[in-house]
Figure 1 (tube, helix red, strand yellow):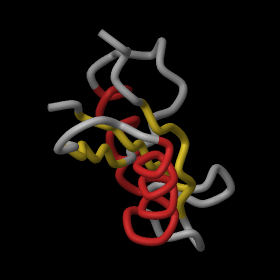
Figure 2 (cartoon, one colour):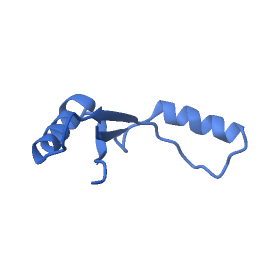
Figure 3 (tube, one colour):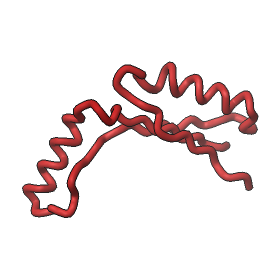
Length: 84
């Protein structure tokens, strides 16, 4: 069964307290080559059957309306499995 991956990130203009905490921890560990960290969410949706145009349209709507909060987050990627 194919799996569709949806990635959601905080909007760039908003603070990311989790990312800031991880960036601080990296700096304390001497990992200075990293200038910032942002933490997002990854969703995997398993599809029963084929990925049709209708399924793609549904995934885009679900990503925008259910999986992300459009006030503070952006859907940055929807990845479909490659055709076999």
